[in-house]
Amino acid sequence: MRSQLTIDLRALRHNTRRLLEAAGGAELWAVVKADGYGHGALDCGEAALDAGASALCVATVAEGLALRRALPAARIVVMGPSATDELGDARDASLELVVVADGEIPDGVRVHLKLDTGMGRWGLSELPRPGRDVVGLMTHFATADDDLAFARVQLERFLAATEQFAHLTRHAANSAAVLAFPESALDAVRCGIALYGLSPFGHDPAEDGLEPVLSWVSELAQVKRLSPGESTGYGRRFVAESPSWIGIVPVGYADGFRRDFTGTSLLVEGIARPVVGTVSMDAVAVLLDAELPAGTRVTIVGDGLPIVEHARQAGTIAYEVVCGIRSEVLRARRVVVDG
Image (cartoon, rainbow, N blue to C red; front, side, top):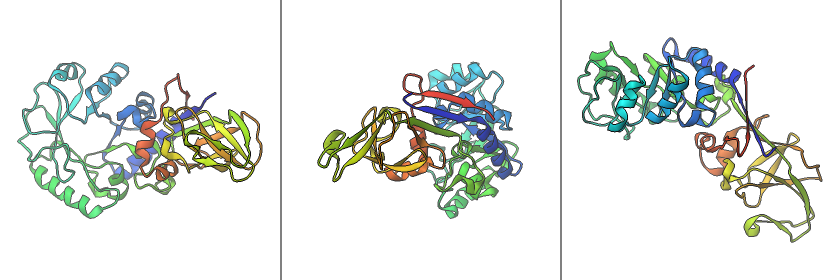
């Protein structure tokens, strides 16, 4: 076994119910774009719907069409821009589209108008009068995870612009806003990262009542002793200063274990051991304190080792790390458990 990814749908259902509780009566729309943040869009989407989510949100029409084939009755909202030549497929599949730029609003398809209230990215500069196909109005917070003052400014702008259209579904809150800014819940909330049991604030998800959904394990494929002056990996970035035991784990950046994770720790038999040398495409080395047999379990994520620890080492966020994990069968075994 090179490595195994386990997706715990029981945890995802728990997180769905926790976010519904935090939403205070608003609908929960589960964000499953980017293959469910690397967790599996279909499995996670079905579990979220079963636990009370009202809709699934994706980034592209192609993502929406893939889900529609498996979930014929689900409400699916495409949050990113759509090309003109995609409108027919979106209409035939009963997808809902988000209008993110000034211009013509498509006919014959349910539409959400996105107002840019401060994100400075996708969104209309002014809100036109909604037509008959418009079912929702939305915005996107830029700082709900670290600057609630500006998030409140955005909410005030949005409420002022949409007050006369309150009969439509209004939605603004993301995971961070649902947990830290409950007055932003409005009619529906769009939750992604928290659905998967990862904190939008970069802290222990248990502080918000969330449970991680993904775990990742591998094993020591080879163990070898380095004499002083010997090295491991490309570039000789780790040179032994004293006799040292090195364990080689058959996971690398082609699997989503990034080159800039050097210096992070993995759990070898439950003990944190540092990653040393250069992370290569298919392998990484850990420094051991003694000789261990090949096949010894190595935990990459889980068992108390959160993804955010690797993200901090790389100077990035957990979102980027999970979206980069490769779970296809040619690289890893993927196991879905439920209960």
